[in-house]
Length: 134
Image: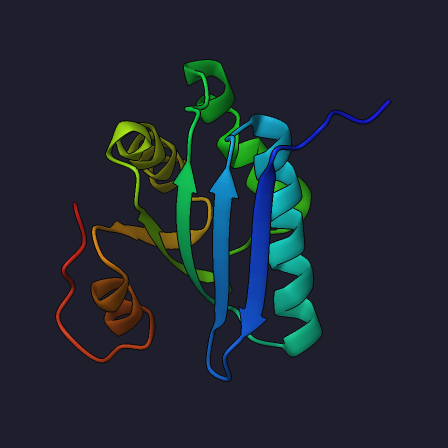
């Protein structure tokens, strides 16, 4: 039986990037579903720049976060995907940053976490200084 996923994902191809908007209750199963949809959209449009924004109401556990490199490999996220991500909820942002650091430390994916959408978009499209949260 499939778990109930309490979130909404909107993925829109914007020409030179794919825009992802995720809102709702965060979960590991939801993350697998979200990233699989992102990979599918990137393949469909042959566009591997991803601008994402999320507002989720639940953090992943540390164990779930540690599984993120395996999740990315399972769904097919590779170095060709350039991901600029914004977590709009201050309560989940620290865990999102932890996930990003785990991925970076394991050399999985190519992404950054940002505090605002405009900085993320500029980095993604190479239009300005790197103003990541790092």
